[in-house]
Image (cartoon, rainbow, N blue to C red; front, side, top):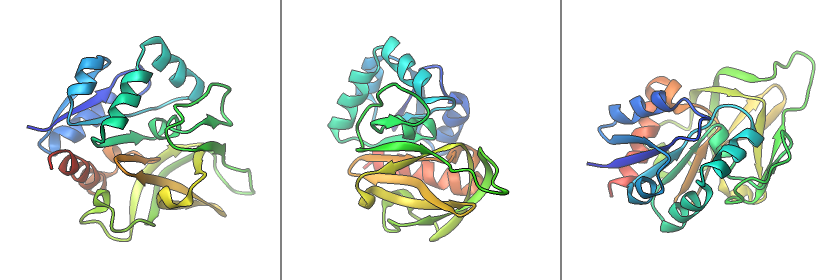
Length: 207
């Protein structure tokens, strides 16, 4: 049975993610134990809220070294929403340093007439790494569910795995680099497409 550790640092809708993983046939473990994280076949770093509190909670629970060690292990790692943003060096939302796993920064949507911030609800993403295993059995464009005011801006554009347009701004919706994957949207709230993404992630972990 594939074990997926979902990191608990008081910043995520953990149970929704766990239910999504259960539907894939894998076993989710909600945990902040370094031993559980190290022993898992895959790790998910979820996140809802703000950049600085997220980093402070990770520091308080001594979770940064276990996360970095897991990423180095080469096993599949998935960041979701805020869990994607804190993989980067810094954010316009706060002053704390991010994990720095992916070079780049987090930026805020620019205000424009008629644009709603946060970007909330269903929107279409367009795949830019269409052959990545995370997108197996998915079309080049499909709907997913977003809730965010900030987006990641990687230094290396080749890590961008999908994009989304909100107003006149086209931004990163997902990244993929080696064993690291991350999505700005919520797969656990994205109906069948989201479940397919989680299933594809679990599939990577069971190889």
